[in-house]
Image 1 (cartoon, rainbow, N blue to C red):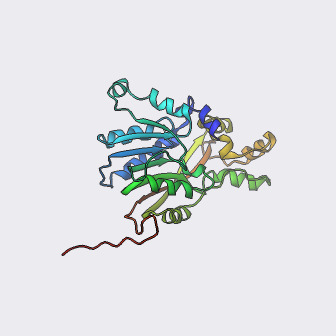
Image 2 (spheres, rainbow, N blue to C red):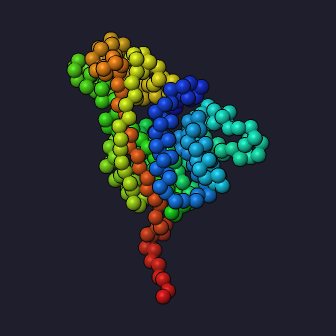
Image 3 (cartoon, helix red, strand yellow):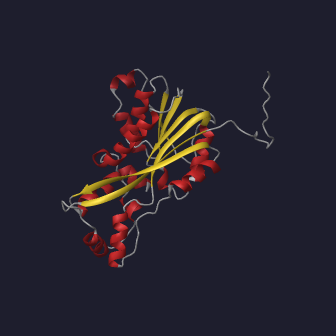
Length: 272
């Protein structure tokens, strides 16, 4: 998937309507949170919509744009205004995998991740790594795809007796349990459904290709099988193809540690 996503850097913005909409809804949730982070990071930043929003929202914070493909980071730089770059106020670019971040522990006040964690077979190691780099009191805010994503294709597959190769995603309860297992406190999870519509199957496939996720999302089938599936895909009243995306939102805080590295418990005494 890394090479597909890297190749998609030039075409990504043309097909990123869902990511932009989800990012806007994530940002609205931050309106309810009163934090003044010194450093913020957009993990899996793609072309940088998220980190630009964080820069606007937290103008005094140091912004980090983190992605595991260099072409996406180059796109972030290209979209950074020249005056920002000259003044040294553009995002700091970091080529890294979310499961192994080259950052010191306890250094970020806010981690933002928009539609990234669901591509991992097991998000728990990534959540533990994000917990490590967050400072005590720091916030993790993320969105992922949930299990009802592209349910239309699953129904079509069952209708024609085909194989279901669409990627399966974790539900919000599993993700909430993973947050607790990773050491986070007070996780808040919710979900909503966003439906996009496409005039033709080819337009749907083109979007997935432009995003660099077609194979990772849909898996591999022969063209004849795809024709049968798309033929059974239910149309809406306007004869367009509805595509459901279940969006799972989560945020959680890094609490004070209950024990130190050698396993001894932390006990605090307060004078009266």
